[in-house]
Length: 383
Image (cartoon, rainbow, N blue to C red):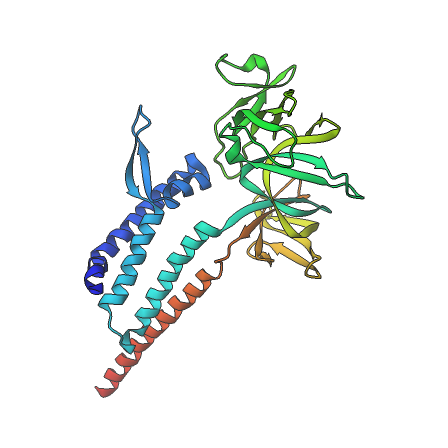
């Protein structure tokens, strides 16, 4: 019964079809990065069951290709079924077993990476210390209040994720003495003069006598960032209302009073706090002679993990990341005339799986070629 169920998935034709569709998917996914950006193309083509196409002039979508999740699942099932049904244990085929096991682990590793890995970035000026990273794409609306019970008052932070901002539903929190409502939310915006707004139908948020924020297309290029903006209404229990315009185009938080409490509000990239801090001491940037093309750039940093009683120096440069506390810090870019280092921060619980998978593939290839080489040498010797 088990073999009969798996038999349709053992076909070599199915393997060829899956590999062919995978090449098509990678081709179109790579081409679409120009329009959608890396994350948009990844979500549409690879982190999906189907790739959809919108009919011109309508909002109706039809599936045109299997997505990465579906294609990977079928390929994985094809490999497992072939291994379980077609191959009988034979030491002469041990290399094939290791090869299949390595490819299966590669597919599973990619799946776990897609589901579990988190990517962010940390911008550090020379001499600066941070204990958090910032999301590439996610935003958050924050309220900062002082803790009066502390001898050295610290900011208490209430964070509202972007998903709630787009719903426009009233938002409450036990630490906030008011209700929050988002009137308008722009995922990307630009500040212009009111006279430059071409149509009265275009939504806008005033930020002064000579400037308004208007929505613009989502930035997709890897070197571009979206600047979110929002119009927020705060309603106190007494019924009084205050309206604020917050934006990543406005660097400083906006302060207001609610009763006898001073509160600050701001919109920023979502922060992910760490149990340790990282300090940038020196950033070095080298280029190829006579060009502006980066040859090498590196960051000399110190990791301070008080809870683990660890304080150590490290050098991060291209192809030499720093691993600490389950996080990997890669040298991503630089800014501000070589005084600001931008580190990519990745947390991937399954980061070892590709290395183990490649090890199995290497063992499989060595075994398979070795067995055939020994057999060929024996035949020649008998001749």
